[in-house]
Image (cartoon, rainbow, N blue to C red; front, side):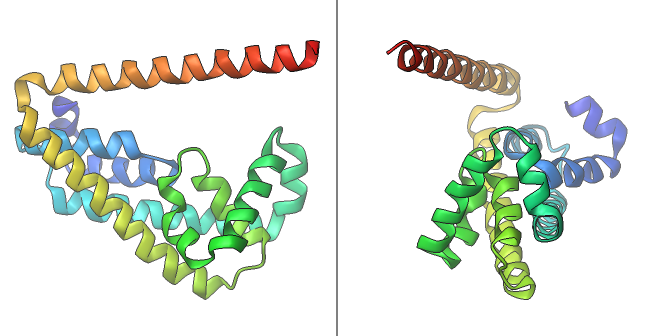
Length: 188
């Protein structure tokens, strides 16, 4: 990853922007850890890139949810349940939900679209989304930077691989657990 970052130069920050536009927690942690361990990544440029990438990604989903939401939700399998969950959280927690939804795994993009579906004021969502994207970017860059400083460059690759394999094992186990639970409920 360090070689890619060095060969791409400032375009790597554009890549970070694009990655954060869609998701990006793991990437931001890894890039910040790489920066701390090797000096190849400027944390301030990374912070700005992922902050604006995350902000604009969520604004895009908000706008799409507001404009095309009901038609799209009917077409995507499982979207109804996620939108209902997000609407429940939005009505229950309001501003706090908008400030924190990007920290809840698996609902970031759906939450933005659901906020648009719910008819939230565009300006209010934009201001809260900008603040939340800054908090998200700052926390993940800082956590990655701390991790990279703590483990050093010689163990960084193994640590990232271990975390990735652990996450993969968790999601596979969760998938199989849900699948077996669904099969048992259908058999009963």
